[in-house]
Image (cartoon, rainbow, N blue to C red; front, side, top):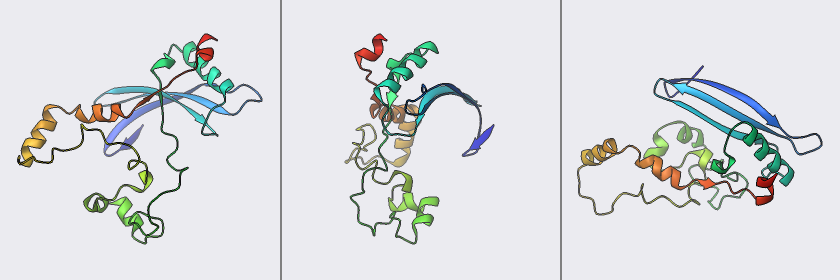
Amino acid sequence: EGEMFGLKFWENWYIIGENDVNEPEFKFVVYNGKTRQNTYEGAFIYSRTRQLSPESMTKVYQIAKEAGMNPDNFCKIQNGCFTEPSSESNDALGSPSNPFRSILASTKVSQLLGVEPVAAEGVSKRKPISSELIPAESSNRAWWYEVGDYLENPHRHFKAMDSLRTPMVWPEEIKKE
């Protein structure tokens, strides 16, 4: 049992597979949970490396199939957010050298100033923003109409996030084994 943003949740995590002996280490984790609003489930791979070896990929595919999952529905995560140097100046509001960084990262002040959260520095700037989330430039509508539109279709933001999803493409030789 846990709580995040005032929402209680209950989760179960299981390790359903791992690497073979003398292969790069990984763990195949499956989870399911529930909140008072809904249930959810998913899976991911913990690894010591950013990329899995072809042998490990074959093993992951095999574990997923044996567990009754469809690996073709998996998506590839953006696993490079902290490996590339930031193109921003070291004096930026969210930079490690800024003495106000912890205040900006821990309060709504950052949103007010338009500063990205520290954990996502440099990530969302490289990703294209979905057209679903870009407001119309010449909108003279009152803000309550915008809120009404959102309440009418709250899935708009899910569609925008889903458009950034990268499907997992498995090599044919892995699928055949």
